[in-house]
Image 1: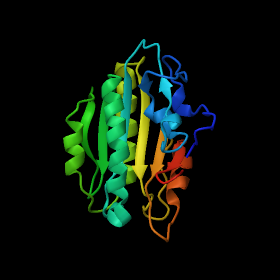
Image 2: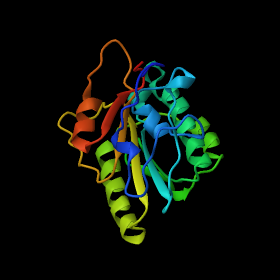
Image 3: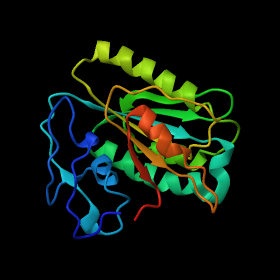
Image 4: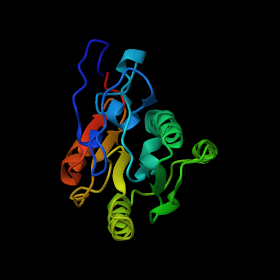
Length: 212
């Protein structure tokens, strides 16, 4: 994690097609930008932004809720980070798309709606189980984002993928054509470390939930 004396490093999520995020000392917390420097431990670790908004922002969140994410409370701890992200999206009036990857196929829960406080209730009921249709989820997300760009070409899109990376060997994910961040929630004494490889395939920034 970035410490109190660390200098924030601009990441791919800090800049978009519409407007440029800047570091400030007050205002709205920029959670995507903050997380690029690690999970915040102190108030000084937070990044604040103001943005010239000529278009809506869309945050697409893909959550791996497969059975393996029950291990060592990986998904449970990841929910805390998602709660912060949802709150920030609500304050910034961003639109959200929410897709879970578990069981036999990915499932949409929200598609481009304004972030709502009720997402906290959804998080409370989210459980882990079944397989990991992560490739199907990313492909579905890519198709949906491409179609949405045709309808809203000025919309600024961002993707956050939360996964433990425990997918079938040989799984290869396609590049996502927008700024992306992968949060690795793999826990335990023995880690496969596949999430970092998946981030490279996606062209996404990589952070582990426990980085400090």
